[in-house]
Length: 225
Ligand code: 5RP
Image 1 (cartoon, helix red, strand yellow):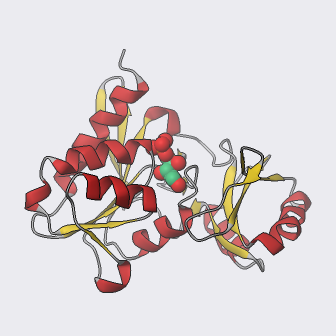
Image 2: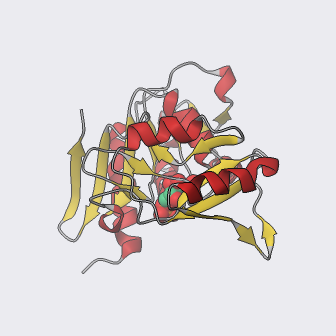
């Protein structure tokens, strides 16, 4: 039986086959992506560089000698590789456990193909088991929390050492429990329109094209389009 850590390494290495030589690669955030960055270092000279979805990933990429480009200085990327907190059978995901959801969605939107790398524990029938991360402007946090309460959700400001976590964009994260998201496309559109919401961590409009799922039998490749 492989450990969760081994499964993450397995899918991270498998994602290298989607990296296009001589091109840029979009790089997400999280513990699975950290393993992908490590794997990417082994082929570093064969890529032009990376566009990262967080300061943490940028720092790690640079530490491995991989050049990091700003989104505004590059065009469309062939591929974006990122993890997920939940993924369903249609490729819809919940993301933002690492508080990088807004930049993740931006880089994903700028990429032709979203390759999700995840271990099998992330697979769900219906999104909502993992507390839904929502990036909000601080002055709107309580109002947005009340809007979730009206839907049956309980929203809490994410804390670290009793202080609100600040994203790379200087905003807060609400983690919302008690939701069962059966129509991720509509739900994402609705929440994104609430005043003060920067991004909701539903990735339905920017869903995965492929998922490399780490299972006890090895890497399972699931395509969604
Ligand atoms: C960060 C994310 C991550 O992709 C998600 O939290 C999964 O992380 P990990 O690979 O550590 O399980 O959305 O904002």
